[in-house]
Length: 417
Ligand code: AMP
Ligand code: MG
Image (cartoon, rainbow, N blue to C red; front, side, top):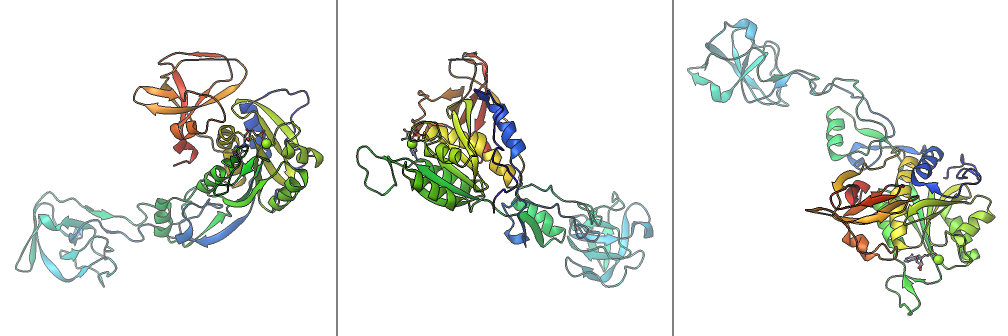
């Protein structure tokens, strides 16, 4: 199923726009892409990592009854005097899952274990380490407090309380909360399926023999891993040569998915078949983004399915995937628009930067601050493995000297581990 609600010109920029600033590009994507309303109800035990579509309400109080917080002896505070006590011990006990039947006689004490429901006539528990047991009586020293060592019903969560927010990715501890509140099923968004296509006559696949003029397709396995790490399903369309019929055929296969991501062929050159195909379909918006690396982004719809045409250079493909693709897909997946907030850290590098484009540098956090990779070449894939995150330099001109605060985002904040 695709986003049929989108129109062919949904990504169009106002006429005359030369360079689109990153923030402008982001807000256009944010305002254009809609959450796909595909939800399903699944057992709670399978919900880890899924995105909540509806906010569940607690089915019962947690804990469901007032209960003992420790192993010890309990009694009713109102049935005894203050100070030290000597109380006859009632027969039987109250344990977790095995409640005491009946009510406790006033002035008596009862053996009670952690988690046991408080029986009628028992509202106070004294730790077993604090008492002495002698001839069927327990001796409680002074200093006990009424209501001590007990937990009221609903102390943690009251029945009917709304739990968690729609759009939240369910974490293991959320499962504990929902289970404790009696919830066995949750309504979650269906994971999106993203079709992935590389383009280029020069590409061969890993494991294949490569002639000297050929290069290994590095983008598709990288993007596949990124998308899987972000909990999307991947429809792998392989690599298409720089030939229109093949590109069209693969795009049409990809239209079954919720979005199509391509790399390469996204500029306006002779062999840029992604942009050409989208242009022929009447839906191309070629965004020239004021960003380095990753300038051209070909956006459009193919048979109603959004296409994100990323650049071919692996570093540019990686950066644009983190900066533009991730929040766009999260929004479509019902997780809401999410951009990690950078941390300000001192630069361990110097750089003079021109006005007019935002720059993302491969960066590494060290004891002395943030270092950057020695080359800014967007084909230098090794810098991505060297880096621990990205540094974002502002759109304006900047003169960065040692110790200046720079905006650093670790890869983990982009969901890369
Ligand atoms: P393009 O955007 O198609 O002009 O490609 C830009 C550069 O990225 C060229 O040097 C391509 O060879 C290279 N490139 C394109 N696709 C890939 C890929 N899947 N893996 C590695 N390099 C690629
Ligand atoms: Mg190419």
